[in-house]
Amino acid sequence: MKGLLIKDFRLMKSQINFFIILTAVTVVLAVFSDNPSFVPGYLPFVMSVFALSTISYDEFNNSSAFLFTLPVSRTGYALEKYCLSLILGAGSWLFALAVTTVSGMIKGTAVFSETAAAALIILPFLFISVAVMLPVQLKFGGEKGRIILMIIFGAVFLIFVTALKTGEAIGNDIQAISNPLSGVNLKALFAGAFIAGAASLLISMKISCSVMNKKEF
Amino acid sequence: MIKTENLQKRYGNFNLNCSFEVKKGCITGLVGQNGAGKTTVFKALLGLIYPDGGKAEIFGKNITDFTPEDKEKIGAALSDSGFSEYLTVKDIIPILKALYKSFDEKFFIRQGEKLGLPLNKKIKEFSTGMKAKLKILVAVSHKASLLILDEPTAGLDVVARDELLEILREYMEEDENRAILISSHISGDLESLCDDIYMIHNGKIVLHEDTDVILSDYAIIKVTEEQFKSLDKQYILRVKKEPFGYVCLTDQKAFYAENYPEAVIENGSADKVITMIIRGQEA
Image 1: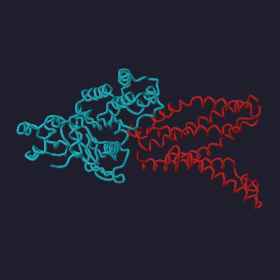
Image 2: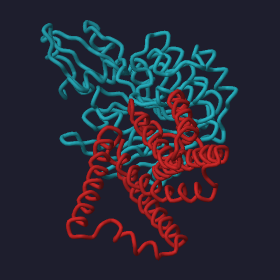
Image 3: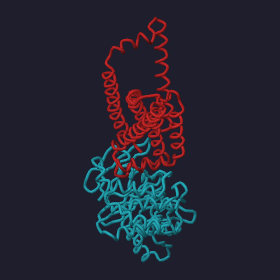
Image 4: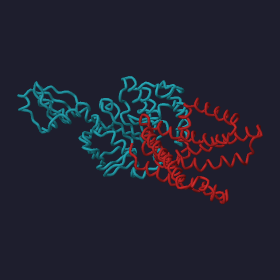
């Protein structure tokens, strides 16, 4: 796995300019935005998408066939992509959190516990998003995978909007839906979200391993 | 080192079904036309595709049971695939170091310099020859016991081809227990390298012979129609009609040279033999 991770980081090196811009944007947003709490929200998602781009690199010029002649198992390859996504996602999350916290402390606009709590709830969603994206990308490849992911996220968005509208139509506004949640212990909510995120990752890993084991190169 | 028995794979109308063996200390060639099944055999051996039937063993172990540790003992090169072309040779070194316990970094860098492979240039900017040399260098740089090389000489000029074959000879000289399975659609490439050659056509092995025997005992006999009528055909393997008469393939050159001095007899070569086996008819 170490060899594959090195390969992917070396491949990403060619996109170094994009990383520099992304870092600069993160710092600028954290310093100048009135509500920088969304920074730890967007950066990990953008970074985890980079893990997907390495799959496209592997497929380019049929390179993945050669990769599996190396001491690499199909399962090992799939798991490495999860590792990479989580390293990039969690790493950028920590970075964004640090920048936002420091900026908040300097400006005196936020306390660490509040920023951390807002950022913490992002992680389960990051896990779920990685859990959805990776098997699709491994199964359908770079190009097709991207289209299918767009359809999936589009469908989820549509379902969400439709549910919201339907809720409003029958008189249950969002407040009514979220009211029962206010009674729930916040810690339990976080724990539940993390368990759901971790479970989705585990299921997704199993699917990805099965996808890779069926593939022929 | 490698043993296959009725190794099968089906793709539409194409059916691979072949048995062959690569022995310790030997360089075995697999020759055949484009689409004959060479790459399918290599992919099956390397676990890139799943066979539909038969058996394939490497180091006495079924290929379906191969682990990454087992794969460390194999050096492979594929004709249509390699490291991502967005990497440089310098990028590849730490990758190989992490993947192979026996990766010899000094050897890799030294040989890379000798072969004129720039360390900091992206592979996509390499010439065909440089890409081929890099593939072979990667395969020989981790003390593998077996090399499986699919068309490593494809598209190379004579000098590059010679350099490449030289690397393979040096690899074999280092340890007599090593072996190489190598394929080419230009079988002439392999005559100077291989101990034995398998010829594959339409997914089947049509001939297996020691290279020395092909070069010394096989021959192409060119005769007129009159000469053909009186030709003893017991050692004729294939016949092909030509405008001037007949072209025949034999594995008993000495017999015909002695008994038919008037016939034109050309020494055998892997290319000529495979052409006759494929295009000729049984005598």
